[in-house]
Length: 318
Ligand code: MEV
Image (cartoon, rainbow, N blue to C red; front, side):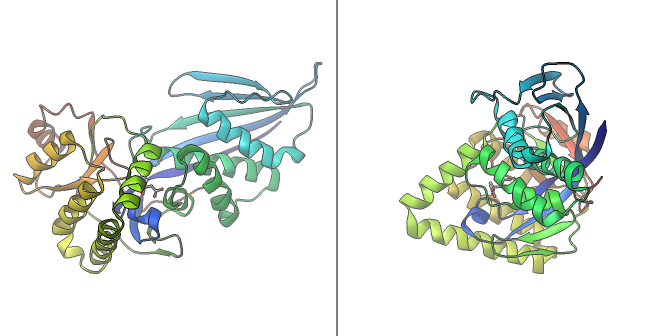
């Protein structure tokens, strides 16, 4: 019996989400919420001998049992991701193998905090560690991007890259660069409104394709805003507001989100969407407010949770 355990962090996009899909620079940091995954390979002793895969999602109590010699095409999307990675490592797996995957996540699912990328990175990381005995970050990042494509269509790769490497990054499709970036008093406000990254990315694509000049202008303005966040962190409040306005122009805000941001603005709290938008999480700069005070301000907005998290943490690790 062989057994590996890995974990990798969730993320916050500080600025530049969506524009990063079009090659613009974005600023992203890893957060102190992690996804943990264990992969065990056991040799079965009883007949019949075809490889099987057991997956259990501990947080939702969901279990799946898959006969790997008879793969169907109607599995839930997470299982499709797992089978894609399994296929990649198939030649190492014997007919008698029973693979067991257990998943536990501190990162809320579908909230824009990178739970799916942490899942993809851990998944590839587990197989890598079990069959190649190392964690080669470059290879793992590349393959986990392909898993992310199964989940999200045409992602930029920012989520899997930050989850693999950790710390904070200035990321574009062409370049990734670690930077020292810290914000104190950054609150994550989970609106509790479900969102789909894939759908939001498609929505922006429709907008950009049907309003080309306007679209390009907004994408360039987002990148300028990100560059200013990096160079003039003292202006971060103003830059949060600007980035949020541009996200609104791209069509990824909602009336409910606008309403929350307006309530916070009245108390001089700057906030913006983080991640895909359409729901999910906001980030807010809250120097003089406690969690309870913010919850109080937003008591009519059905906020799911507010959290202060550590930023710039370690990436994929054993
Ligand atoms: C999702 O975390 C960030 C988006 O920019 C999509 C992507 O970059 O793939 C909305």
